Image 1: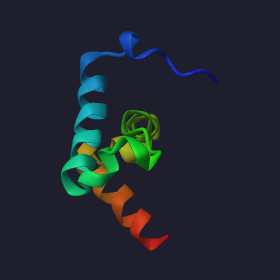
Image 2: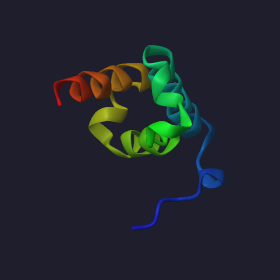
Image 3: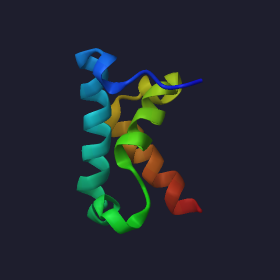
Length: 72
């Protein structure tokens, strides 16, 4: 299933995605580097599409993602 273009998302959806990605950049600035291979906007969108993560809110979802990543 092809994701809906960002231009078609509602403002609250875009805000959630942006806040998730911003939290990751704040907590782990190296994640925002181009050579890391992680597209934070894509990652944030995938998190938003998961209802269980969306219910957490963007900041809490970002913390969960970081916690899970540190376990790997």
